Image: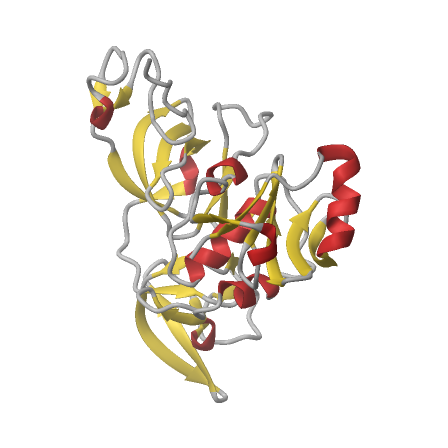
Length: 283
């Protein structure tokens, strides 16, 4: 018997579905969808067009989506980066802009012009994509001017084809003390699987979004084989090993991205969620 499709990764409803699912699901109408780009620093993606519903994940400025439906101020979209499907306010979308660079600082500001003394237009997270149209320099600080308006510190950007570092664990550690946010996937608030996915992405590795998806990503290993960069899983939780004895994870205990001895984490988490369910090497 065929398993039902995961609604998080497949766009289908009784009235409408992604044309790529034709023959796999029943729907009144199938559509190709149209491309769009996220126009706000962080867009919350929800399972229904209802602001009271919890956040499934977040999309960052400049990330690409496919739009299947627009109705009552909401858009039903699928992220091109990881395939996640959900709803966000239609005002958070703009026409596609081919990105040239992405933000590699945990957080950075977009200024109205190449002048850090001006009031910023917005703040962007690591992983945001921008389209650079020019350069400027003010008092020795170099800026990129953007097609979307404003200017960003050039040193906080890299061309999209380049990575921050080969070591994704080092990237994850840059988010230490970032607030924990259920469904968060940015430098302003992040959850356990969001931290893993974002760090891997900035090191050039596409990874799934949620912890249960990550639990099938990469290769399983024995606990005694674990080393830096390996993932440790519990029911509903994942962390990255900084070394054989130290866990780096976004967690609801400290409500931050924190560094913790692995043995302490196992003992603390165990009373509520049990022992680790597995260890995996993602790369």
